[in-house]
Image (cartoon, rainbow, N blue to C red; front, side, top):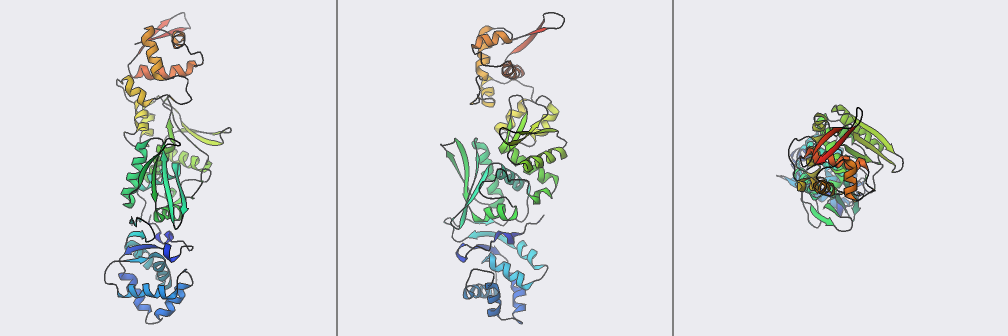
Length: 400
């Protein structure tokens, strides 16, 4: 689906803040010269002036440049739009957009060029999903300040690579000591307008408002899946049970993701948390390898989340160091994996009561310990034996 790049301009833009574009002016020039036989350049400038915050002489100066050009030129986007509308030829708009190469904001301190992206591909769909999940934009002077945030640097680096691949634009990665997060920062009006004007993603606070953009919703399933992947990579989580979950304040976004997963034949549970006022999607299983493999395709390969989920599929040995990386202690947790492993090594062999006693931590629930025992057993760091106490009761014991 082709994008309407004319939407990158907003009527409130003043001449100093105009977006410029490098394009091949041949067709626009040809049609412009034709109408000059019927209407004077001064009259055309006056008519264009009515829709733009620019002087007639400024507009006329640009029209002269267009008329005389013999090669690709940098030209104000709003004048291209108004002149194309004035000429009013059905084929012209698409041809003019097709000839666009890159955009530039003359007022930007870096004057970094931005590639003229005319279609949404899978990488762009992922970036849109990432921005929906953990992105933020706000107007700043005559530009926009944008960022994508995550607690893990690897995902922020990936988002910066996506921006470079799509727009040929360099962003900056910084660590925020205040909230211990990494940020992919970039100041750019053009990219912000792609998000706000074309994809209709609101700037500022958007927790309750975000949803799958209509342009993606009306696209192929592959693009919709790529969008969902971007959201899930940044906003999704993998529990110690192997369950994948994602929550959002936006009911519509959760329903959009639910629909995409359903189209991919992945069944998930949908619920609402009254206390947190958020909607939740959660996978049906953290133990079924076939089911988990389908969910794994939504995560970027070799990232922490990807490898954590992959653990529940693979049948291989893991070291305690590898497990501590994949399953670090949560800030709300009363126990960690390492403590349970060391306890079992100390007591040599024991059931759940022996382990709790060895931990000397009465606040830890049996359910929490069982989750960690499963991880340790699956990684082959410990083994389990089952003793038959009587006809209905079994006694499980774990040992290194």
